[in-house]
Picture 1 (tube, rainbow, N blue to C red):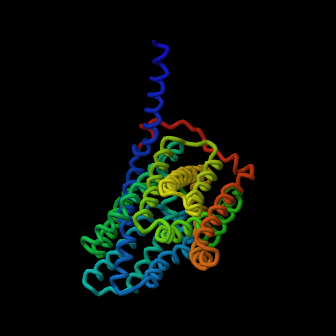
Picture 2 (picture 1 turned 30 degrees about the vertical axis):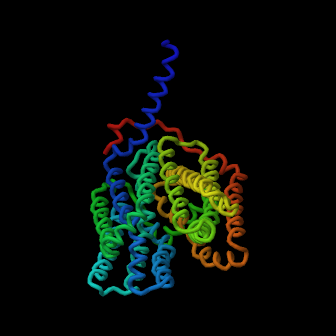
Picture 3 (picture 1 turned 90 degrees about the vertical axis):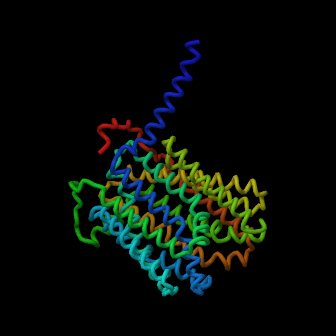
Length: 431
């Protein structure tokens, strides 16, 4: 009997160890502050888009005005993202996060006040969106580098997974909660709440000590920018995967976010069944982040490509007019694959790119992914009218599948692995 029971006890012990290691980053004070700040900010950002949309509509703006408000948020990100990468590598990332949160809090707070007093116009919301978009261009590269500075290397994958769980969990309830709050108290209060979360996040970020003993060499802004580009270009595995993302991201966003609701209306019969599809995707995001928390894959290149390829499943299901349960299952699989892929990718980049260049390198990576998105939105409508809705979705699924597979032909991508370093003792890691 002793021989039979031993494996079971060992299995339970192994699971306990994995669970302990999975939450170990929360034992690091600086990471707890970073995690809490991000979680607070996400709770505001999850409900704000619905408030912003209805505020624009209540001011007499239509779809064109709403499109202008949304474009105003994306434009500054594209223009300033590389600048934000240089700034985050030159100065304290925590300080950059503090001031970008403060700027966003002020912009949204002023917009909320104007809405409360009935003095707002659509152009006020356009300016607010542009200011928050510009702040995001500096915040994103800074936040991408903080985990490297505050979490020991063996725990970074778990730290990235914890952040993804927090972000994706908020995404599940955020849109529904935002709709209820807008209906109950009005968009001004919801935008005001978003401003308050930015302010609270700024306070928490101000408490993060990033050990400024780490020297950041400043060689001039343009030289820093070139150095980041040289580092990005020199890593073949990195730019190949960014090229992959520059194809997949716009195709996915066009197929799921733009054409998906049209499919829901014309084929599924309305918003309610499409809501099940969206819920499936967000549930998959949470499940994938939880899986990544307990599983650290070694063959990261293969995992990232497979996770990326899973995004083609919902588009293929729509193109094939699959039953609703099959379509929901496809979106669950896509969300799970995407979350595992993104978590593993973040851990790999943090492991292989030097900390002093990480923000700049990541800014080039992010820019490569979002730059084609506006073009995709512009051509999606005419293309779907010319080809038809289902053929366009089918073409999108084929493009995603091809883009996912092609990088695996490169040995450097197939051999991408995460290290198997042993986690440090809690007393030496906690700070």
